[in-house]
Image (tube, rainbow, N blue to C red; front, side):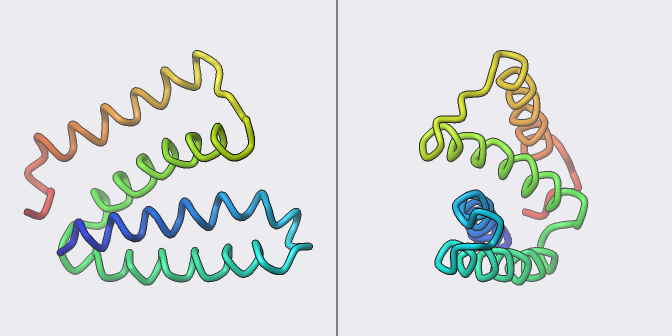
Length: 109
């Protein structure tokens, strides 16, 4: 159940962060509402995740996965293409998340 909550928390955070750019400094009501609701939902779900998965592992997976997905959203919605060093750095983040999930004994299963 922890990983279901974590996946939903990541999706809510990615939607909120993507809408943050569209809110144009909170001057547009619709995207601003998505930001507030998305972040609120994300943090609520994170609080549920912590009942199943240790805090450090939860945050590492949430932040790392969110960074990569937000980058992809930037490419798709805003044509913000990362350069090679950014791609390499995000590859390292993905590798780190994979190592945590595959090899760490602190991951709640």
